[in-house]
Length: 187
Image (cartoon, rainbow, N blue to C red; front, top):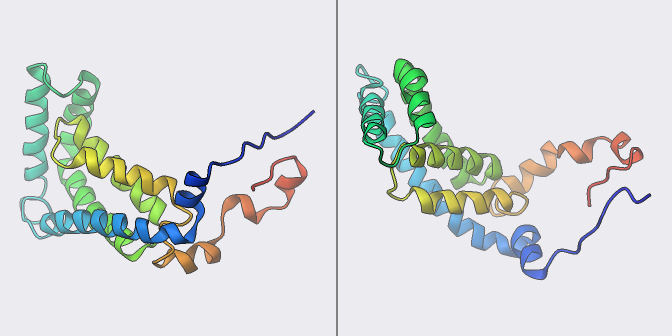
C-alpha cells in the first residue's frame, strides 16, 4: 500500500513559492504590506483613542458602526455582529491595544522579513476581521497579498531575516526523524 502520493509541482508554483529568485517579487510585496501595516499601527499607537487615556474609544466607535450596519441588514453578518457586541465591545480597550500593537508587529515582521509567513497570516486575520465588520477600503487587496505571502513563506523572507532565522529555528517536520519511520516524510 502506497503511503504518499507525489504530484509534481508546476514550474510557475515552484518558482513563486520555492525559488530564492522569486524572493525579489515577495520583497516588493512584503515592503508594501509592511509599510501599510506599520503606518496604520503607528498612528493607532500614538492615538489617545486607541492606546492613550481614552483607549478603546476609537475601536468602540468602529464596533458600534459595524453593529448599526448589521441592524440595517448591510455588510455585517449576524454571527459576527454578535461576536462584536458581546465579546469585542465589552473588551474594547484590550482589543484596541491588540490591534494597534499587532499592526505594528505585523508591519515590522514583513519589512524585516522575519517570520514572514506568520506575520502575513496575522495581517490576513486582521484584514478579514475588518472585512467582516463591513469595512472595505484596502482590506481585500491586503488580504490577497498577505495570503500569497503565507503561501510563499519558504522564500518570501529570503531577502530579509528569514534567510537566517528559518534554518536556525528549523521546521517541525524536519526536526524529528521518527516521523519518517512512520511513513511521513517532507519533500
